[in-house]
Amino acid sequence: MLVTVPLALALGFGGPNYMAALAIVGVGGGVFLANPKAFILGFLTLIALRNFVAGGDRMRMGGFDFDLGGLVNVLATGIGFVYFLVLWKNPFKGRSLTVPYGAFLGLFAVSIAWAPEDRWSSRFVTRLAAPFFTYLIISDMLDRKMVKQVIAAIYASSAIPIVYGFYQWATGQGNDITEGYVRVNSSFFHPAHFSMYLTFLFCIAYAEFLDEQRTNRGLRLLYIVCLVLLEISTYTRISWVAMFVCWVYLSWVYQRRTYLLVGSILGAFGLVAFGRGIVARMSDATTVFAEQADMYDLNTSVGWRLYFWDELSRRFWDHPILGHGAGSSVMLGVELFGQEAAPHNGYLRVAYETGGVGVALFAWVLLTMLWQGYRLIRRRSYGGLTLVSHVYVTMTLSYVMLNATDNILEYYEVAIYQWAILSLVEYNNLRAARRGFIEAARFEKELEVDEDEMVEVDEQIRADDEAEAERERSKAAAG
Image 1 (cartoon, rainbow, N blue to C red):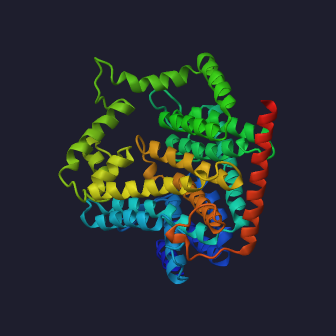
Image 2 (image 1 turned 90 degrees about the vertical axis):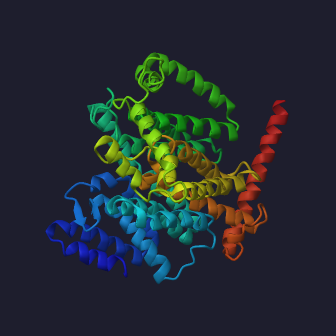
Image 3 (image 1 turned 135 degrees about the horizontal axis):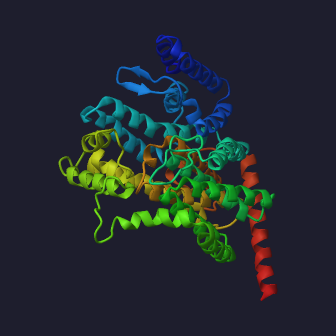
């Protein structure tokens, strides 16, 4: 209430055009206070439809300038403060990312003091904060029932983006023509956002398809085919690569080598028969490096990126320790191109805006993310307890790759799903640590887990052991 009520009054005072914002904040805050779990499940659905909310007049209040869709991250950040300050929750217990990401986020927040412009600096800091607070709240209220509900909410919320994406594809609509390609963006602001969202959905759906304990495999396969087709229609090259890596990783760890062979054959045939646009899109990136080509041709997506990255790298040395301040890379885009432009490289952005200290903190965050997924996998590489860990590892690998050529660092409407899955990974790790299957981390030792939860863990491990024994017997009989 300390955050939502003042914010609602401030927005409502602006006049009739602000009443939609007042309704979003008021209803959202009310649902959260009445039933936090219902709010989180609804919030995950709202994220996928954010661009539908983003129409209408922009709101300008001092240094703030955002549309109605921008209230999504403002609401998440505000409620995060309410949840942990008013209800006095401890954000450090049971959460591996609180310290490293808190330090990373804090550095960006402090850097607003020396940033060249207030609007973009505050906007970026809020975007970094939204998925973090969502992760804190979800992880605080998880139980065995809500683990399934979060996955179900992610699936359910994907229905409209998928259907709308196919509608755009069939009608030739979508993003403006980019280098000769009409790129489908569905309910997201840009095709890159949509493609990354599809990649994360693929990680979940394909892992569950490979899990022998899952049912409705035919429907799951159809869902995966829809994701792949839409991924192709976004014409986002780095997301193609990320989805391919996730496919190889999951097929390998679930010992489906045949899927790799069959998929490779079908993929090669598809490229020859129908993939002229895919091949052309991938070839566009290589022509920039041709002997006679201008590597800094601002009319190509690769050329302007290289030019931008070269300037970021060169000017980094002007302030190598703490950088130029949050949002400063966008202001550099104004200087270079005459309009606000993000650098499309998360690593160079962090380096330019927060210097070497920010790079070190970002590395700490990424390594901690990977470590959480790896903890359980390295001990038990099969069974229901580790499925979500495999999903999360592929999501994090995708996140690492996508940061190399795009702005996923600020795409909170995509990152929020990865953070939600991270909370499920930590929950599974906590349960496994309580039964001695993995070592307990320091941040987990003071947490209590219901005994009913432990009974479920015992039953799951027993079922996993029996399934593994049956697989070994089947291999021996076949041999």
